Length: 427
Image (tube, rainbow, N blue to C red):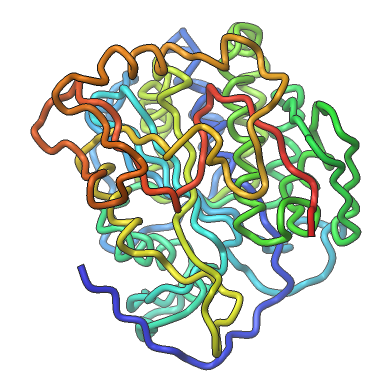
């Protein structure tokens, strides 16, 4: 695979603000609704409030029955930094950047899910995109990925990620600032471990060492902070956000949350006024069917990873993230082949996170670890992570029971079963 990159002039962008894509929580929330009638009514009510946009070439499809969607799912989750309609709490910065871009893949057999975070400063080619006002925008050979939302809206971000990954993405969702506040309130807060104090004067976030149950503005502040975690980079912020994400999934799948229909419905309602959905995703039955595909996936099979990149570039894009294409190809070949993935080692959580030294004993040795030990000598077992990307090629034999694809060391992340802590700024 070739990946041409040509340099353009420096792109002037507003002050970056990150926001995690909360649609994972929406899907997981609706998942747990056991009554089909309630699920249908709730999602109809929610979707009736959501704005929609047509992706490139998108037409309305056949509405599925209220059951797990047939086959796999690729869904792009975009967090916008737009202040439009958000009040005065977030400042008056103009623009509409996708400062969070996440691709969620659900395996065809619904046995695993992989969520890939793309750094906002990842310099990539941008294809020709439809102009919302009519016509189209020219392709660009090298720009930070987070300009795509302002360039051609959600459809442009989808086209860019499709070109970058080689995957087809039929579903997409965009969420804004107020969504995280309302959703974190609806779920009752998310426990987040902090291993060093987080002190960020830019977002006003200060958290002492320990575990904090974050909701409302506190949750939003934690997800926005970049200067307060790791090395102050967006790569560090992604790994810190994954601490929140994995805890969110555990919280939503906990017994208390799953049995509280009011909380589940409130979680979905909380996002509805702050989202734009692709037409393919706006059907209430489609929302439910995708959610149901997530229902029975084990926590250790829900994996969050960051797109691999280097900040060693110079010139116009000094300090920006240059893609490590060969390593990324291993990841997306595995996703295309419907193979689950594992990071090089459990401690490979990224510069903004680390394994929780006080993690529950059950989390320290999951069933997945035991299965991996038992299957170490079995055909199709995962390659040795230390052997590099070439030895980590996914199993394409069609063996559904094949072990997970081992990812190169450059790809950081964690599973929802792993208890991790956010690391305060160390620079």
